[in-house]
Length: 278
Image (cartoon, rainbow, N blue to C red; front, side, top):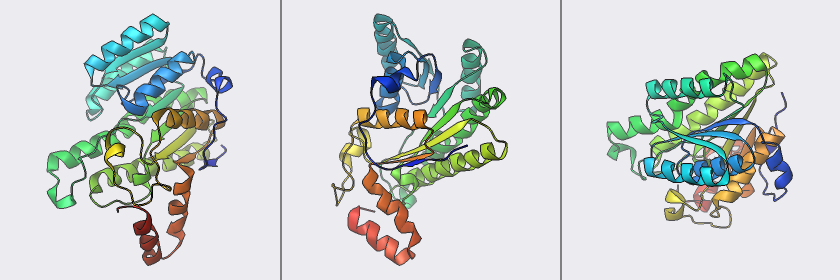
């Protein structure tokens, strides 16, 4: 199983790429807003059969209306991914609808406690962050991976974060959960390699996206940590799946931070503090 790394921006993604997703059966968590919603629509417009999980029922109604108008195969299902039982129930429904097989699983759902110091976080906030951002990945992968392995085909996408490769002050729960999601998927990649499986994995580590928390972030060096729009991130995710890239760090300038871990901690800390508010 090939392992690729992409850390550079590219616009070489267009209609030809969209065609590669036609007929694919896709499950996306956190699909009622942000990157998840935009990815669900883009894939559906490409001819994929998409099931999106989320909790915002008003948004779901809007999506169903748009999908009906445009003739998309896009169904939204209410699922709180902090609940293992709810994931198992929805997964069973999806597998029944897709005749037992999902081609692409995108673990995108994520929450944050809003930049609190570790001593200010409540037990409930910590549990919620870990349940949604990390443990949910275990339950979804365990639900959908066996059929992928059996067919020797499929792809698991993990939307981690730059905060999954770099600690940030005030985001201890978020960083811990995103580091965990990164480690889970990397371990899965090696497990699949050991059995010579053709099932692929992709870890996506975006920096600040022009929505939600990203808009409010204070960054020292905006040239290295620019705000990216959602459509760009969606194109990069689709490109990574199509090219079977194992790791995508967005934007490419962040790669320097990733590589800086080779240096002593004191040097690494100095580099990161120079660039970002960590």
